[in-house]
Length: 362
Image (cartoon, rainbow, N blue to C red; front, top):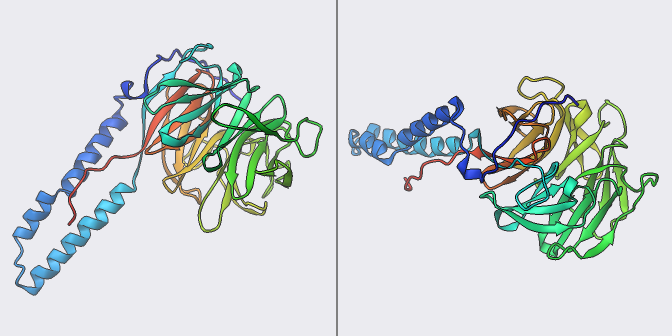
């Protein structure tokens, strides 16, 4: 993986570090244009010049109302990736400090769980950037998934070659999964977990596969992928994410193949998208993966950027995180994305969905 010199980042809460880039100014202009186009005053002005008694006037009024609704919906779905702030930035063990954070997981009530890997803990960070204790004593955590409905937390322990099932409130052990690099049913290097249906999916980067465990028993159900670069094969897979559409699908960051591969939950290969490169829709070591807002968000370890794509892989937007180090896990909470910066021991905040102006019903 190409190395990049880490730059000093200020320790700050997310809302207080704002980028004044040209892109942000462009976003402000776009939102101003949207406010004008969607203004009820503008609509009323247009309608005032129409004669509602005439058939032409009635048709024109109907067109105006429809235009207003369609434009509102279209603009609300636009993607605006804008860097907002950073939390952390100092390596250490104190609260507010991190040591090589890797993967992120959304928690109930808008917080995120951070695998603070080299501090052997998981911490909670609020949307305002406040660090809170969460779970101590996990060994090199590099992936987590939470089943809030059943009060279960799953954590991947990288150097223990296993997945643990814990109680999220106190970290009490519920069950250990298969353990040991030599075992066929255990991950050699687990990094990245996702829940889908009755399965817990675990990326095994060293053995170039994804393990599908029964989420209740942590017994291996089946293996997805094999080492290689052909269709359905994987090289150093890391993050995994599950869609919740009518036909559930598993998305895998196929890091060393510089692509995203998609499978059914039972392991049937569906498609892949992406290849090595810097053009939109191409990747340089995709490392983090999140499905939200009907889109796929990918962070690139060696590309130093985050991309937004459709679920078919068509590029929508991208933002470069200037001064960042190796980017790892990514997750979405509300309209924002949070991305782990391993080299700088920080978490970046990115706005993914523009806040559109409120209008009354038309």
